[in-house]
Image 1 (cartoon, one colour):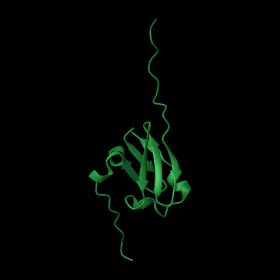
Image 2 (cartoon, one colour):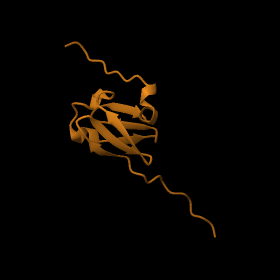
Image 3 (cartoon, rainbow, N blue to C red):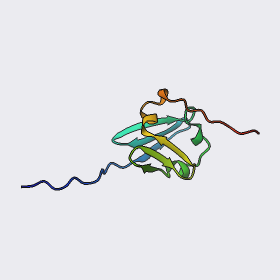
Image 4 (tube, helix red, strand yellow):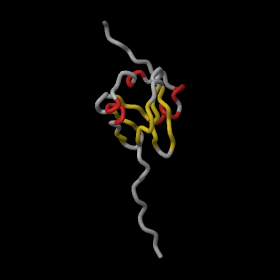
Length: 90
């Protein structure tokens, strides 16, 4: 008996919780916390903007309404990357 061809990766990527301190992303069978202090692009975002999430090439997360892209490596090792939001002149 021959095995069938392997199917697509079926684990869903989603936002599992949002708090006043940040939010959790479920990706690749693991959950990652993104604190607003380290990921300030999301702090003032609406829930609908945070939950509108796309996976690009199975390596990047994209929030189209916020124009934010993050690699999975940033979620796995956030201390390895300096994430600093720059604000324009006020």
